[in-house]
Image (tube, rainbow, N blue to C red; front, side, top):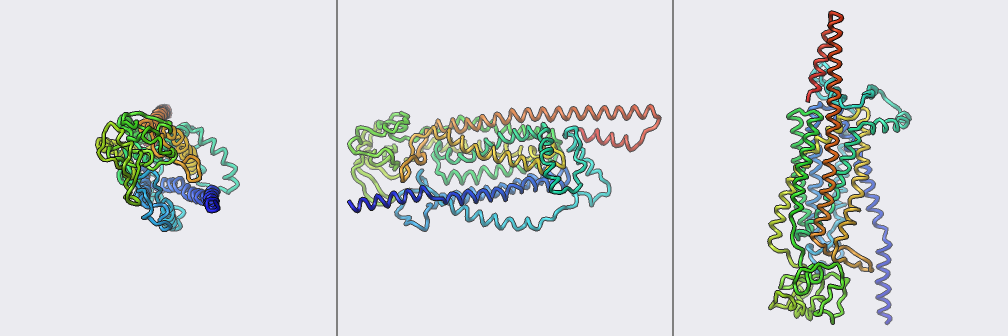
Length: 550
């Protein structure tokens, strides 16, 4: 009794220690500091680049920056795939005593090693930023003494700005007090710009879809197509991300090669979004049958029978075994059916140790319509049927093509954003976009995606100290409909908002063309009435007319 009491006390002390652990605070603070450090890079960096480069070169430079930025996630996914195969407690436990493999849903990889490696790389990558000059000569100024290039840039950008002042005072130095005082009026000016406001809304919906997809895509590939978590992560890193990088650089090259205006850039972005949406729509029709798990997706006789009730795990063949319904220790029988545990399979004896353990005389195996001469079972779930592999290859092909198409619209969309805001509000606009999109587009999706996906769970695990743990197996069809349905719905809304944004841009372009025509007619009238006209004014009018052409 004393020994039992001692074990009880030790067990519950360990549970209380784990439940009261404050280690998560360090992970939270680390992510907060990382976010503070990386957030200014894109808003200020893009503004820095746009200010000192030729207008026609900006799209290509942006594409290069975003393409190089894809290398980080690509390496991260590949490193994550490698670390997912390493047990979380490596160096602290005897790995020979671990009875599960990395293909098991209960496996936890060495996630903490990723923070050590990435933290070191981030620290080293910050060093070059200290050597950036405060300002650079405007690209092309040293090649020409005139200001035609600069005037063209201003005209291209200002044509889509509201009719207010176009930031003529942007070169004047301001004090910190003046910046604080001007903050609220600047925000009001910013959101009065209909193109900017609609761009923020469109990006917000698009990022919600992307974050939800990238968060649960490995789990989707694991549950729907029977792939291991490490393989799913590896395939995303080695196939999808290079396609994204190629798409970004392609979009930037198209803008530079054909010298597209804002309307042209908007057309490219919308076409890319629609193409990606079509690829996503086809993916909805690719699915595999549920894994055959006795009592959950099939009956013990082997007939399809979906059940969310844990009591269905019990059958006549295991009724007298006093099996626990909380545990998930799957075994694969030689009839191709998975059982939630050796006990629920009715196994009487076992041989071997660790991962090589084999269970014998499993009475429930004989109840199946697929009579098995071998009444044995091995650790782990049974693999999916061969036809699922061919469907998975089609899914990956569609996913890669869709990723490429979607990325082709990334740089054009960014150019539309840059050219539709006042020069003096550029840094504020990009910073505000980053704040809104990362906050409302990055935090909520994992929450509501996860909550809805949890509704499709068939078997929940149990924590060591009691309580519900992670989901061990999902209803694959319900998972697919929920996951792809959410993404498709958000992508559809993104395209609707993109269409509205395009209409706003075209209307503003027509308004500008009409205004330029009126100005030109006015100049011609003055020329007739006065009998002479300034050649310089006529020349400027002609240049303005050419610049307004799409």
